[in-house]
Image 1: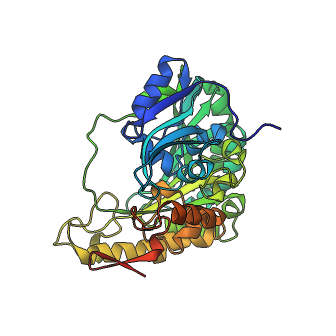
Image 2 (image 1 turned 30 degrees about the horizontal axis):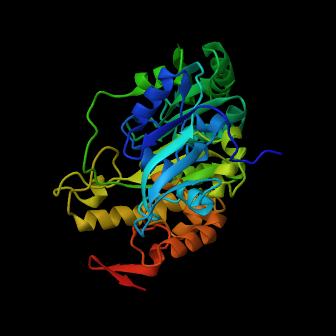
Length: 411
């Protein structure tokens, strides 16, 4: 039996500060593809140290699973190369252990997979009659279908936008089939659309649109990139949960996902056979990736201007809490932690969170971010950085310090 880190094939080496779009473009020039997220501007280093989920992950694994080697400056100042043979503990811990924790990574070498054609389509459903109960029943049905989709080779970046008295709630997503024709991918989704259109009367309408084929993942990825500038300095808070088959079939799923989605929820089908192929301790990412199917994330945004009251605006999509407004920020974090993300934790109490889209205020963050892998990660952190040269909130070993009025104090 081969070692799980054994590999013979093409690879890409990228500086930690390079972006994913450049890495994918380079791979494409050589007839290959690499695991990237949804945005070309995301940095390689942060993406890989946080795990790295992608539409390719359901079939190919996480980006952290594809890392073969890395160079890193340790807290001592020493520069080393870490891989499965040299410094294997450091290699294990950096692949999903988070940034600002073990050192300054200089570069990563990671697998490149043979380029494959992809198909893509938009799948949407809503309640034209504004029947919220029927809409959430339809969402509950859709949730149970994600294991089937993953096993059929179809992945998705989807989301739910809440409705109001004048406009319907909407489920919409980009569904992709790697190495599939458009007809093959549409054939997987069509029965779901047919079920939704026939099972809820006039209260639910679904449709499949924008069915496309692309010669490569790179071509699809480029087509999704927006020309609009990325906003800077946005005040918002995230939380996320990985949902396994048990959670997707939870007896109280409808009520809990409805509560979690008060301000909207991303419902990304990015896990499956590819992430499940690795053992739970292959690297330090949460073992929830090895059984989950959906990465669900929620966000809270607060009042856009000082003139608004929290009751008017703090759960309205696309508004922000005012800079330096500590009251609005505290209320948003309180709602996120004890309301919306609490519903996700109740839905999937035994899984975990995706580190790159997680809350710094997550209760029991050690369990949520790394699960059963945390004791080993903490031991490596203590051995490598006993003086805590590297520290950040809700990171490995951060519980040894307390921030008081902007000053770090030993606990």
